[in-house]
Length: 144
Image (cartoon, rainbow, N blue to C red; front, side, top):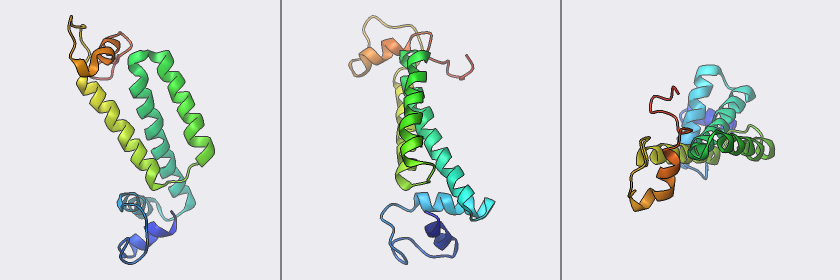
């Protein structure tokens, strides 16, 4: 992932001028980081760390309805699973997983906003909404 963003900075187009088996979003993101901070292994690794942190905090946010202890455990397991086997390489699928997990966290928050549990919750989120109405669920401002 070091050479392809450089090629994008030179004006080449992925899958036309060189073969890249993923979408161009990850290359554009890295090319932007290279433009701002310079082409270096450190820049690529920092972007990889940002992608991994997106996965870790997204999983933490998804687990919050079950309490902060469980969410912390999920976050720690996510650290072990994401950082150690792969390292800090910025790969296309890492960013995609981070965006997908963040999207799930935001969607789950929108489905079941904080509030008192109702007598008859809607079927899609019966268990989830009852867990989400616990005091462990952060307020909408995020400042609990």
